[in-house]
Image 1 (tube, rainbow, N blue to C red):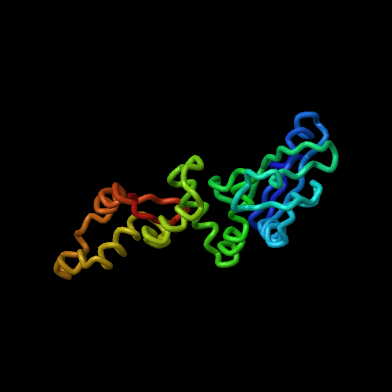
Image 2 (cartoon, rainbow, N blue to C red):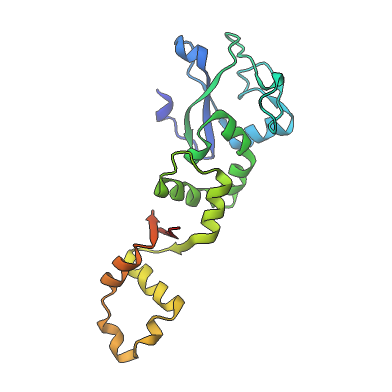
Length: 197
């Protein structure tokens, strides 16, 4: 079974020692954001128990204490081989650890899937931080809708456009056309809509 076939039900990452991986000695260990946050709180990073515990200053990772040595080979380079329920903006070991508590909180609040959809929709390529994605979501989220027509109708109601048309004329509104025009200003993924900026 490869790491890509393992499915996790919480924000998780498969962390692997790069030296072991390059020499065919390791598959890596899955660690949840909750476990990563606990390691940070304890100020001892072990990469899910694969490394010798070392003090780690998350605010200043470029210190001599930032490197933990692999228990098998002594290597100090770590990679994410795979991740689940984690936006690609947290697709490195450092960013996964830096955002572990926030990822876990978003998951507990059922907001992580929305942030995931948003990250996929705007194809960040890792250019936005998790905080920037969350701010974008909070400022531009327009709700969940079954289709673009429904979104357009609810949008028209919310801004008062529909009230500008007399009641007896409303059945003649071309909602598909209105929706197509509206979608020039919005993103959509998984039924969730955001205003594009």
